[in-house]
Length: 444
Image 1 (cartoon, one colour):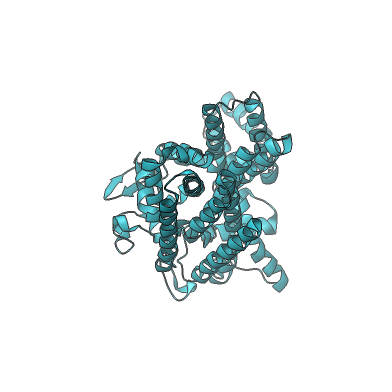
Image 2 (cartoon, rainbow, N blue to C red):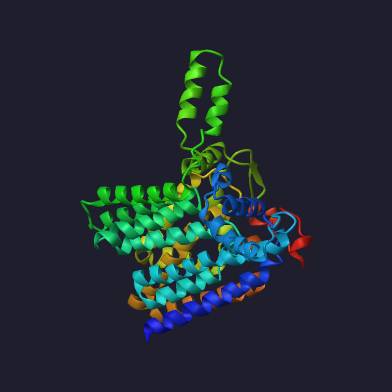
């Protein structure tokens, strides 16, 4: 009966949240990334090469999934789409395809929270995630952030539930999700390693040491990276940037040798191209703005403060109450993973939106849901905590009704709400326009 109720609850949340995404997709402005994803994604299906995407630093899995139905549609109709002039026609289809990753995130939110503290933890996690404005806003788009969040959440779940199991559960399945996270976004393997360390660190604090940790971790990472490189393949061309560098060298032996070596090593473009482009982007930083403060490159406190602005008040309230009144219950694997990503966020220098921390938000929701269920089960104040949880869940559901369809621009009530949100945070935190027709909207 409990499992049946879980599935009914999960399907209900998935259907209602998907309806909210689909109905808002045609009214949301075109984001900066979507036109280029449509263009390069269709080019990938037509030519078979991933080079145009990888050269942008974009990992291909989400774009492949989003543009595949568009490509099949153009094959059926026998006329190729123009990604620019037909954008208003094909973008809603690509956005709808992104819901596949959204459903994966909801399924694993339930599984992960349930593994921490039973069925009610899973149900609360699904509800809070389905009503999370930032997730709903990005699940509406044909971008990569929900995809990497879903894959990392699945990776974390299989990591902590399979740690003492057989090789397939301990290494094989986590390696698969590690590879899929890497294929979704260049930050995927970095966040994946942090999650791996956080899960093992918690185990060691609890005295659950494992002599096979290093060996298993290396296998997980190696197999995941192998999947990444096999999927991305190579066009067997010289590395363009390296070749341009060599051609600018002064005439002589050094230039001749350098050009000869680069032309001989025809392994590019490959997954390494995309990863190192994103590493370079992060090292250079990006102009940042938050709460009236600007910086040419980055603000170290950007993401910790931004999360207090963009997270819903019910989630912040539950987290604060648990920290003050029931801290031991928060020491679950999901919360530890979220904490690891939060600490790492001070090093993240591309500060153009909370979307880079969606994996953290998903893990926090799972961890808080597990902690709330644990307190209700074990505390003598269970009825009081039950009322608090029910009140916050109701608040979250009611809140999304007022936010729709502008989840991308969500600013919580503690910072004045969405009306003046552009004064609080900029870039992808507030770049949503609403119109009656997608074709009337400019690219932002």
